[in-house]
Image 1 (cartoon, one colour):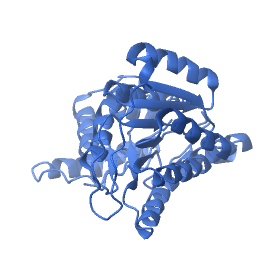
Image 2 (cartoon, rainbow, N blue to C red; image 1 turned 120 degrees about the vertical axis):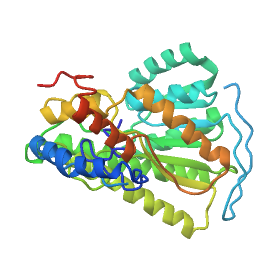
Image 3 (cartoon, helix red, strand yellow; image 1 turned 180 degrees about the horizontal axis):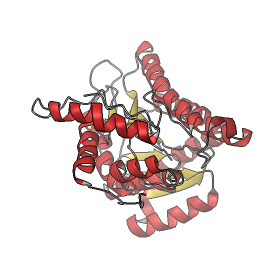
Image 4 (cartoon, one colour; image 1 turned 30 degrees about the horizontal axis):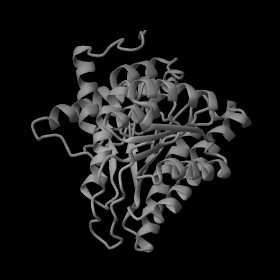
Length: 347
C-alpha cells in the first residue's frame, strides 16, 4: 500500500518535472500561482511544495524476442501478480484487471485478509480468474513460495506489481519514532521490494514471454522532504534508484524481454493516507488532490496493459497525477474554493 504523490511524489510535495509544460497562454497565471499562492500556502502549512513545469483459462505463451528493440507482443488475457493487494490501491488494481479479463494473483502477510478479499473478488468476478496466498515480502522464503504458487496455478506471470508498503500507520517526527516502526517501514518498503524484484526477475528471465515488473513509488520518491514520515519518504526515494539500477543491469545483460517500470498512483484515499490526516495542511492537500482507489485503478490498468500489448521493451513511468492536473486542481481550489471539505472537514 502506498502513500503517493509522485504522480504526486511526496505526500504533499510534488515532482512533475517529466510532465509537459502548460500552454503559453497558461504560463503567466500558473507562474504567478506557483510563486505566490502555492509558496505562501506551503510555508503557512509547513510543507515544501514545488510544482515544476513541466484457472481454468490461461492464455498460451507468445515467445518474446531477447533482441534489442521490440519483442513480440503478448496476447491478453494477462497473468497478473500484485503484492499487498487485499485492500487499498492494490485491491482496486486487482479488481480492475479482473474486469479487463485477466487472471490475477493477490497476496498479503495476513491469511485472513487474503481469504476475505478472495471471497469478494470471486463473487464479483468469477472463481476461475483469481487466486490468493499469504506472503510476507520481507521474508525471502515467502516470496520464493509465492513464485512457486504462481507457477503451479498460472504457469507464468506477465505483470508483477510491487505494491506492498508500510508507514507503520505512524505520522510523527523521526526523533519520536520507535525501533519497531522504523524496522517495519524499512524492511517492508526497501528489503521487501528488493526481494520481490529479485524473485520476479529470476522467474521472468526463464519465461519464454519474459515479463514486466512495476514498482509503485510514493511520497518522497522525488527527493522532496516528507516531514512526519521521513523514514517512509527515504524508502520511497530508494524505489526510483532501485528501478533505474535494475533497468541498467538488464541492459548490461542484453535482456530486453524483462522490463522494470515505475508506477505512480498519486494520492489515494487509502487507510494509510487518511490515518495521517490530522493537520490543516494534510486535510487541504487530501481534499484537493486525493482520489479514490477505484478511480485511480481505472486509469492505471489500461495504461499498464497497453505496454505488453504493444510489445514495447522500453521502461515506462506511468503517473496518475500529472503536473498540469495538480496545477489545475490547486488553482481551482485557491480561486474558486473547489474541493473544499471533499473528504475531510477543514478548519
